[in-house]
Length: 352
Image (cartoon, rainbow, N blue to C red; front, side, top):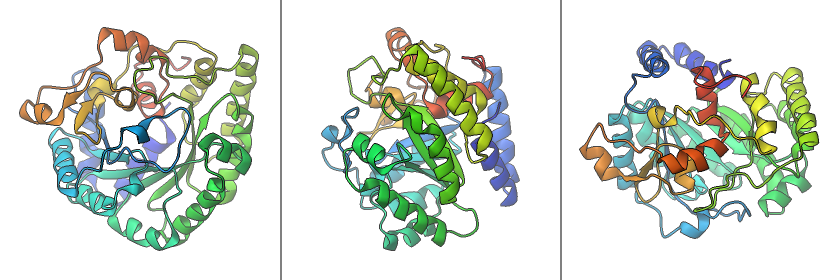
């Protein structure tokens, strides 16, 4: 049931001889499975709300009022490391819009953190690839919401973005050393693009990336309790489930676990999801204002936040979803990184 990407991380660390890191990750994962873990296993740091896209399901760019300076972001990385995080995902907005992102990556590496980058792939011109890779990323996910330019560009509202991503992926693959950093494409599935899930996996294979992942569309609009506005019919849900299963069977590049893929179509058809989630114990997300949240969805919806200063002052303090959030948000969430960990830890049934 383990997500393929989790296994790839462990294998890469073993190849690098980081036995201590692997042992710590194994102990922490076992503690999570037993329900006795404290502190995040991994963390998310949003370095900016700014974005050059204007997706209809997202209001993050409207929140932007300047970027946190490098010194502040380094302090937040140090907080995450003190809290026990073994890895950090850098996100936004579009993180590559932060003028000192490469220095942020290097700082995270100096702290011993694994570093992952989520990007829309539009702000990485060829001349920026080499310094980004030199900073020491372990993995990169690029959002690509369809197998055709027309589909992706319409969803993202930026003509030409599909071809820009194609060029970005080619540059990353050409400049990296061996298989590092691990490069993946991620498709957010909606009512308008779900028929392209199999072509998407084939495209990822053709482009030569290491991973192709799926997640259902979630709205990122603060104050909206309904996370997914991209509902599909029950008939379409059956077809989508079969297409996802076929995509995974036909393309070894597909990264998601089978259990996670089985949950995508029911979610988009309106089914509620298990309320139990490991995120409040396994994760910590910090937004650009320095507010901590138990997970990425609650961060984007601005729920249950705790200022970083309070988290730093009390090692036992941690953001927790309220009872209302558990019902309104957690039961309407099938976010890949959190739910995949739940499945790995067997916190939720594999047939969810």
